[in-house]
Length: 389
Image (spheres, rainbow, N blue to C red):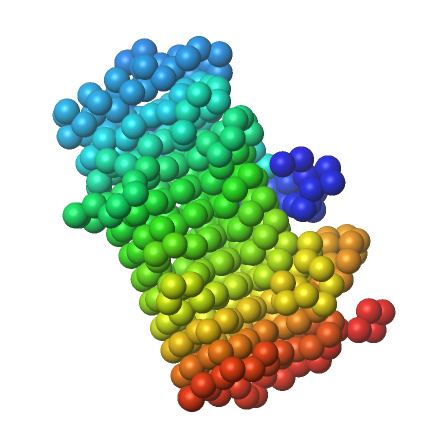
């Protein structure tokens, strides 16, 4: 997504230039001149197995041969820095695909896997990748095609065993589908990664037992994180979820979530939306999050113009969050949202000790009715945002 164009996402020049967090960090032994990862026992060098990495050669067959050879040997593949033009690759069980994570906030660098053309369903297929590790890669979708995902588990039913794959220190950007579409996946982790500028969601989950830690979900055209079908048991901690075109975070009918210590900024609609599906959202903990400037693209006065929306939830603890209104960087754009916390049809839920200083333009807390037994809403100090105050 062009940061200078008329799109939702627009960051400061400082952020564009910065190598944020782990994005600028090379693998330790590379940075200090020690032997490169291929020297490690069990890692195959993709270049030595025929991949060019010159951004022009079709490296699909060479990379797939390397992955298959690593699976046969019980090892992994090292992808040296370069641009590897490739179609869909199938990662095998118990293998590792490792690169040098030199990508930055604005674009790919280091070990880059770049989508060759629109004749793929995804770039990395993890459907059969039980116990695999994906680390240190920049996946570049180039906005090609329609609904092509960066990372995909292509299933319509859950497997009999856990997935157990790990995605670490990767950038997954500019895909015409989701950055990661994990369909019928369970027991996995996504850490220290950036899923950004995709035309779908940053990460779309149908599954459970996920650990999502210290990631960016930035500038996607739909949600930053979305779970619209069966979902449960997700630990969502220390993530930055920002400037997505729809919800920053959407969960429908899930259970067993820990949403703790995250930064949610400038969603197109809801900052966080917990919606009733076939079942209610149940047993959630929302603590210590910062939710700001939600509802950028929502109609003024609509419930979508809110920081937090809770519909039919049960057993939810919402405490100790900080909520603030505002507009785009550089004091441009429209001030939002209309509402702070909007809730209805709750049962055995607590909304307490949240701070809504300048938390909304119209109402800090909006009760839409239908509350059942055991609902506590109290001690949520704040004030309405007044333009020009």
